[in-house]
Length: 195
Image (cartoon, rainbow, N blue to C red; front, side, top):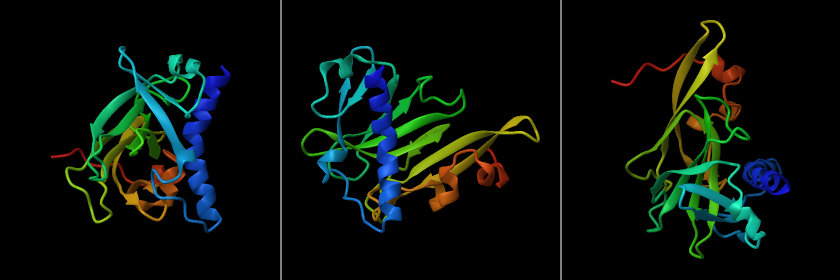
């Protein structure tokens, strides 16, 4: 159980460290330069992934409680390495049937990974080409329960890489959308279905 909590804290900690650094007016290290942010990810025959700090006990890679699975393998930043977008299905971190946590990891030159996104979405699809930051923007959707209609209200956003923070920023660059399905997001109109 301790190891599960440690991995969850590792995932959530990446986001919290960047938020704390931003509030202290310190720029975080660019992805893959700070080895303390790096993790080891192993793919298992079952299709499950395990995410552990370097040097963790072998038990860490035998713990499948997070139910992490590959969502996409692709090069997010045009460096020629295969980066990883993970979808978490676990009851420990899963939210409900319409929202899941997604994590995006850059593959570092040493074979480890650096988390550059951790957020809740219904769908996540990378754009075909990078933008001016050199990273592919992410097209995302969140389905949030609308208490006034008792229906799910989909909202579509674009998530871009923030070079100053060294990770993907909030949806549409709007800090209030970090609080997924919160009051601000609920005040926005639902998106129309795509053509």
